[in-house]
Amino acid sequence: MVLELIVPSIIEFIKLFLLVFIPSFILYKIFSPIRVKLAERLNFSWVKSSLLLNFIVMLVLVFVVYILFMYLGQVSAVPRDPDLDYDFLDNVLLILASSGRIIVSAILLSFVLLFFEMIASFSMGIGEHRRGKKQRNELLTQAVGIGIMSIIFLLLLLFVFDWVPLGLFVYIFYGSLNPLPLMVLLGI
Image 1 (tube, rainbow, N blue to C red):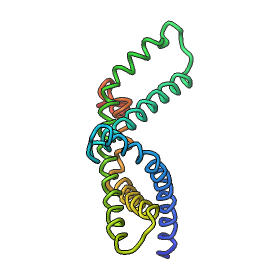
Image 2 (image 1 turned 30 degrees about the vertical axis):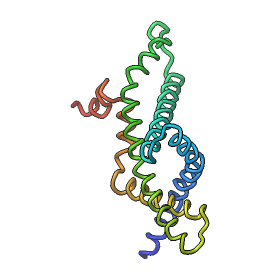
Image 3 (image 1 turned 120 degrees about the vertical axis):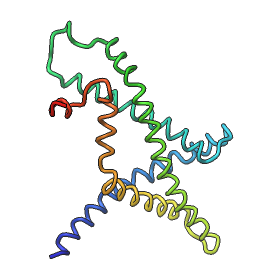
Image 4 (image 1 turned 135 degrees about the horizontal axis):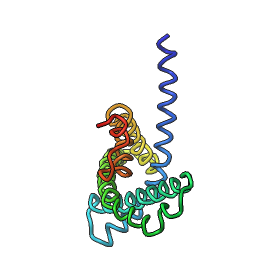
């Protein structure tokens, strides 16, 4: 009876693990050489170069997602009077008004990402320390480090910080310019 409840949960967790692990490993392989070159060029430490690269990537990612959602909202909106419709200047002003929230979100996401990079790096460092005693594949060491990071990420996201994705979305798109939709519904 209990096994019928536990096995599907474990299978779903493994699916989520693979959904996090595979992109994380690919992104690590892409951005790790870029971080090394950035550290050498600017004479930064590992933490500074990782944080700078995280900020740049998160800023571009959040900005692209924001523009994409604005575009999808404009395309799927009910047609209205051309005099009331947003023009290009209105859209640019909306983006400028939200640029502060986009920058703050990118900073927060870059620090969160740095935390998980430190976990992965620590796990890889343990593997490299042991590799001195017996030869171990570098790719396997990286995979184990990113795997440990992925498990910790999923456990924290699913059981502790499950409110963060929705809260970040609401902050980016509705943050402090208008009352939140739920507050309007509740009459607060």
